[in-house]
Length: 175
Ligand SMILES: [Zn+2]
Image (cartoon, rainbow, N blue to C red; front, side, top):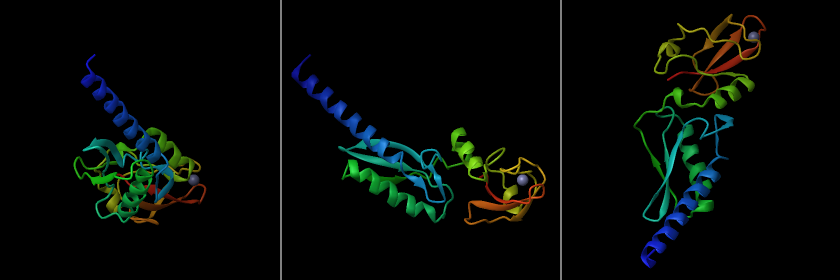
């Protein structure tokens, strides 16, 4: 191996390590609206890449205009800069985020925390008007539930009430 090649390999490894270290750091960044889920679980963090010797964290916002996006960007930048002080945030609007990107593990965590995860196809606008789908109660699994408000504590969630156990719950809407 030439001296030149050896140097390249060394740089390559160092770059990989930096990206890996930033990714590890970002595993602890939670979704401010669902604090038991990381932005990685939610599919908001798309990737971490290396550009011109520093890391770039690529994020896709969930809902355009969702107020959490600003908070998430700041949290991600702060976490990434612990490892790489020159790290940057890039917002990628395409491909658009959909609830399909939420991992199975994240859906299970939602249910465990009393929030009904998105069901069925993404881009189903039925939830905006509240008709169409039956959302099972995350507490007792009853299908006898009723929409109280299409907007819950945040614009991303709808408020439901279970007619079986009478518990109110929130449902993360499909987009
Ligand atoms: Zn119930």
